[in-house]
Image (cartoon, rainbow, N blue to C red; front, side, top):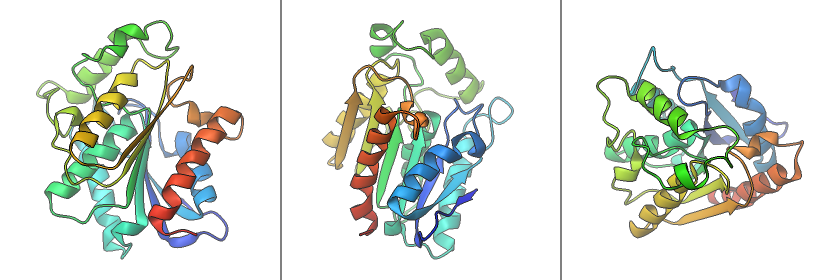
Length: 243
């Protein structure tokens, strides 16, 4: 789905990956979130509807995301005029699609903006326990069940293209992660940011105290969401060359 805000720059694009545990969500459930950002940046957004688990387990979703990036480049959109954005499972695709593109020798986008990303397919992060009961959406058992469904019978929870906490992150473009302080997935963001920084990547992470998973979905209705997205907009505009 293309989002085309009035008066936007057609040659600047947000490539957006929706969340939903790789089995739910769609370009329709997330178009409002991504449209808020595209309008504020003054660019277009391309929202991908990738295949779902369990009918299509990993790596179907990653193949679809990588194909979308290939397609954008084939439309003569410059890589430095593209930014990735995605929430939860889409935040996973933000990073894993970069890894595929880098390892295939493709030019990389200007910036990446994961929201409440999900990386840990093993279920070993401390925040799965320390934030238990604070997170109003997830339980540790549910996260493990979704991971098993995504990976399928032959999937490896340590595969770096599924779990980028095991990936070599050197050479990736600037990353800006936002995550809620009460999320079970909080440490996914913390550990990815730490390892990216160690690899020499330009990384920013903002942890919002008391906030829930993908709270930015309330854009236009909650000041906390609007303020968080405004931070993304201010950060990404100069990286896309938008005045």
